[in-house]
Length: 241
Image: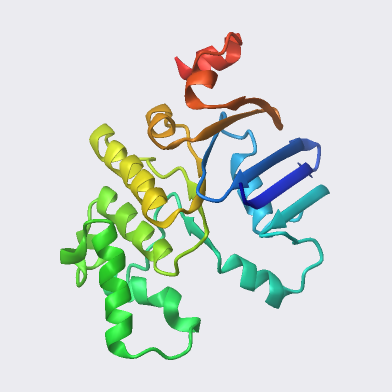
């Protein structure tokens, strides 16, 4: 399998708070990796380190075979363009329509004909079942629709890795399942690798090829959803129950 990201011996502390303590993981092309853990266990810090938003204290991080340590900003930004990020809140621009929100990531590309830009926007919205919302404002959308538009905006640049930060937070169970299924559909359609940070066990069950559980800054367990959910470890069993 082709490895698209690898983290070795990652450590990160904030003062006396040791958030990550020797984290090692790989993610392969086309794989959904779900990261579970209690609040404050370092899950979000992990993905911020992965894209160079936070500098680790120790360890190495490789994106597409490149060690990101010491990379100049221009080179790092080229790698970052291969990584999509779905924020917990969807992070849409409230003053922009859905169309304008999706056009925004295209602004740094060479000038494209209007027809080509429109086609990319429509394709992205079709992927998430929201083509009819193209001219709506974010304030007119439900929470689930905002998440879908956020995902469409993430997909418009065809990233090779997508980082999902709590993609189902704040959604009702039915909408949460729809978003989880959508994540799975996009993996199958585009063969993307994804890291999915979540507390939602049902989301993990639907989307995961592999699961890791982080506790006190270390990887406590790793395996398929079935393997992890059947663990004999009392703490892991309580987490799932």
